[in-house]
Length: 95
Image (cartoon, rainbow, N blue to C red):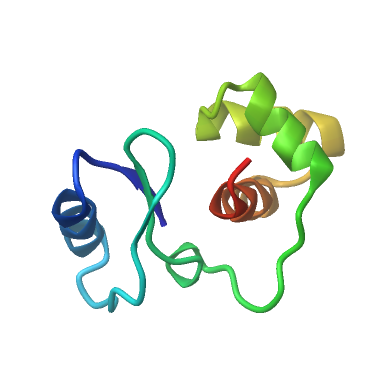
């Protein structure tokens, strides 16, 4: 899960507000105020790959996830769920 918060406690509180049954396994701070919580929360299981196209879409969108998903869908013809998963998994890797 990627979320924006002022501190670690705030990031964890956002997780519990949206996913009250999930367990926090690890919290990592990314640049600025973005916090990575868990790929599993996103429904991403198994190995994920770094996608140059997804990273390019994130760059063009200046990190705006929703815009990056739209760009990825336009570029690949992917459906919304597939595009969301690849963009979010590449955010986890840090673009």
